[in-house]
Image 1 (tube, rainbow, N blue to C red):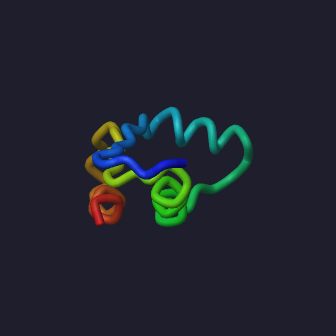
Image 2: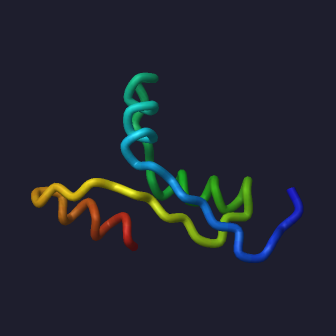
Length: 64
């Protein structure tokens, strides 16, 4: 794939989670981000999640 400037990924977190769950897999988000960068030259990835107060550590880790 030819590198392009400003290549962004917009990810629906609920669909990603449910799809992975149905396959019986667990997603390593760090490796997934590397995959997006290496395979699709994604400069920025945005994941849209619903907010659940008990998941603040998860949200903080995903931001990093």
